Length: 228
Ligand SMILES: *Cc1c(COP(=O)(O)O)cnc(C)c1O
Image 1 (spheres, rainbow, N blue to C red):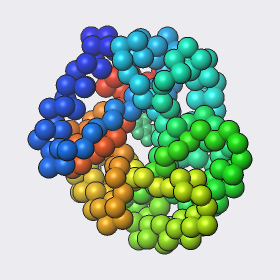
Image 2: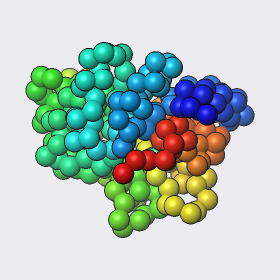
Image 3: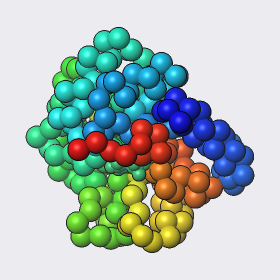
C-alpha cells in the first residue's frame, strides 16, 4: 500500500470506530504526524486530501513547512512535542494548535508573546502525564487543577480568545493497557468542560476513539517507519 491508500484505510477505521464509541457525536480529526518525513512524503498526502499535520519539534517544522504552506495555504499544523519557552514566539507563528502546554512558565511565555502580532496559534491543549513518568513531559494529574486555576487568573483580564485551553492530550506509557489513561483524560476534560481530547497513536487509536478521542495523532501507520 502507498500512503494515500493507508490514509483511506485509516479514515475508514476512524469512521467505523467512531460509530461504536459512546461519544460518537463528536468529530475525530486525524493529525498526520510527519516528523522525520520530508515534503516528498507529505505532499502526496495533501494531494490525497489530508489537511491536518503534526510535528514534534519546532526547528524541524520551521525548516519543512513554510515552503509546503506556500503551495497549500489551507493545511493546518499542530505541535505535538514539548515546547521550550525560548521557542514560543516561533511556535506561535508556525503552528495552528499546540498540544503540549504543561507548566506555568510556558503559560506565561505564551501570554506574553500572544500580545504581539504574528500569532497564528489559536488552540491549546494541556498535556497530562497520566502515567506519572518522570522522564515524560506533561502536568501530573494532581497538579492539573492548580495549572487550570493559574491559567484562569492569568487570562481573565485579557481579550477573549487570546489564550484559552480547548482540550487535553496524553501519551500513555509504552507497553501498558492505554484504556485507563484515556478514560482518566476523558474524565478530567469533562470536569473542566473541555471539548477536545488529543489521544491515540498508530497502535492504540481504536481504544482512544472508543473512549472519546477527538484528535488522533498517527505517524507510522500512515507514513511507514520513521526515517533517521
Ligand atoms: C511520534 C508521535 C506520535 C505518532 O506516533 P506513531 O506511533 O508513529 O503513530 C503521536 N504523538 C506524539 C506525541 C508523538 O511524538
